[in-house]
Length: 177
Image (cartoon, rainbow, N blue to C red; front, side, top):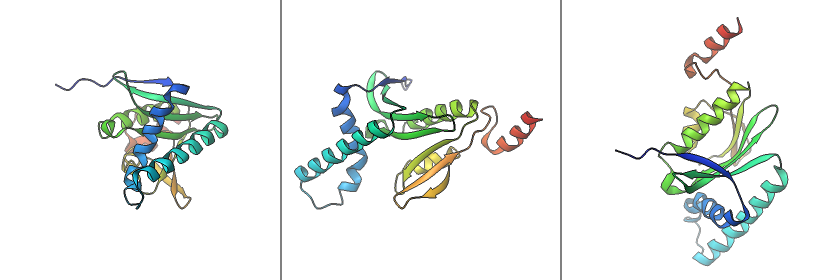
């Protein structure tokens, strides 16, 4: 029998940077496999891109919770979540390859949707056009609301968590009565 997955979060610390780099690099591996660079060039590029992204997130999303995702006590990914008065914004969510496809991302996203839904807030996320997780977000009820050329801005409007997604509008109408 499969061991149950214990998913936990902890704030990132300075000594997590090498792990966070590994997570970032894993999200770019497929893309860089198409580039005719040697490994040293790819590594240098990834280091520069990671440093720029990390700095940008820290400077421009100061009200964001920056967490390491742990699965059964082991670092497995990152979740950067901004809780605003008008929305929950998933700034970034990424898992190492060995943790993908196991329902971890779905569970985390569903918990975020439930939390935002209880507060009557939408959840928004930018998703690269070729991101395989796009299918997960669509199954969770996210819809594309903008296209920046590289990213889709996707949104899921708040829905009562006690109602199946297909019946959410009916349930919302009944709860308003």
